[in-house]
Length: 179
Image (cartoon, rainbow, N blue to C red; front, side, top):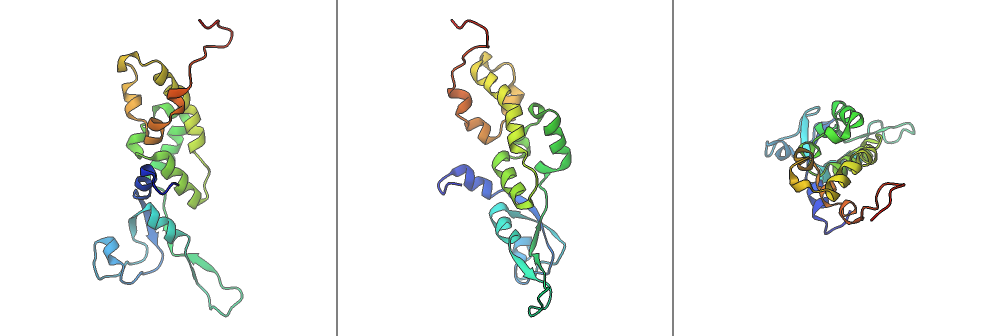
C-alpha cells in the first residue's frame, strides 16, 4: 500500500461488518452513542483501517500468572456483503457476469485485505484471470461503446486503471498471419 495512493486511502475507508466480543467502555461514539459503551455481540460497521488494527489485538482470557492462559481477539471481523458465499459462488461460476463496482468500488484491494485478516482463500487472482480476457477484448475493440456497456460499467477501480489491458498491442491469434 502506497502512502499517497488514493485508491489505498479510499479502500481503507470502506466499512466492514465487525462484532466486539466484550463490552467496550467509552467508545459508544462508534455506534452513534456518544459517551456510552459498546455492548458485546452487536454488529458494528467500522472502517477497514480501524477494523484491521482491532482484529489483530488480543485480550488474555485466563489468569495472567497461569501458563495455559489463552488470548482471544478484541474484535471479530465478519465477511462483508461483497464476500458472502453467494457472491463468491457467482464469481466462481461466471466472473464476467458479476457487477464488481456494484459490490465494492475497490473490490480487489478490499477483498485481499479482508481475506488476509480472515485467513481465507484468495479469490482476487482467479476472478481477475477470468475477467481479464473480456476486459482486454473491450480495450482493444472499442466498437463505439455500443456492446458490453453493462460489463464496462461493472468494472471496479483496479480493473479500470489496469494499464496492462490498454497498453499491450494485439499480436493476433496463433497461426494467423499478422498484417
